[in-house]
Length: 305
Figure 1 (spheres, rainbow, N blue to C red):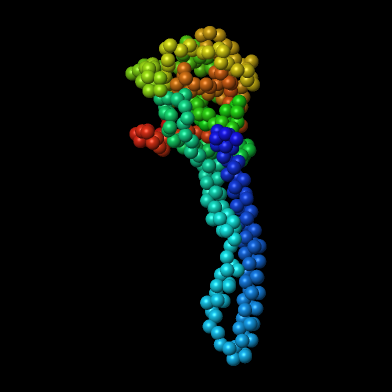
Figure 2 (figure 1 turned 135 degrees about the horizontal axis):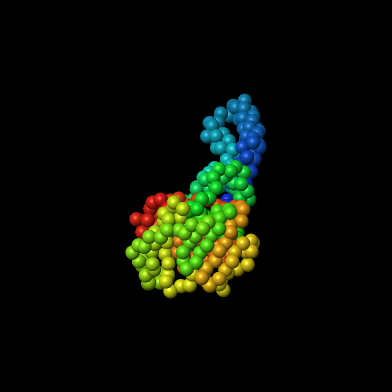
């Protein structure tokens, strides 16, 4: 099992560890500790009886230290129980925080540049889109729905062990058109304001940078003038693919109910819904909202827009 698969199943691993350590802790508190106490009481009763007999025979001993040592030895938890009892509350707390409140992620690629850089350590709000059962990811309480412009973490539809992060471009029912590197949402063209060119350190090249106003949400995007609007060879077969039409200049998609259309801010360096389709609601992990660390650039700390 490779590292990516392990990380993708970390919640399951954490859940299993919590159950195992929790069961051991429960058994110890409500059964095993009582068994040790009973065994210690029997041993101490025998010890006291022997001492009483010796005293009656005129032999006086000062063995309180031995008595305490016998009691401590019999009440001592086995190492595996001691470790389980120590780890259980820590694992349970981490599991609760990651499952229902906030989960940390590390940005592995440049698909969300300039909003997110490689190496950014981010926090994801796990409850803003509803409360879900851990591991199963089944929503049990509805709170909010993803909105256009949200930066969202989700399970990659083609491999559920991988977490992806992109920006929500289309919500259920939206008609998304992307032609000649310009977005149109429900017939309304998205506004773009040119900014200074952006230096791509990875490829040592400059990209065109724009301020994109996505139905009221303003953020920066990058375009590589040398890249095509869409690489048709990279488009895969996906559920509801009949909702999309492709051509050399771009595509048009109607977002089906219960699904979302996602794109990276680094438009020409992002594998996203253009190529592998829509993201079902069941795949949603949470909303990215804060960069809390980047070891290579401490100035990165701050909110995500």
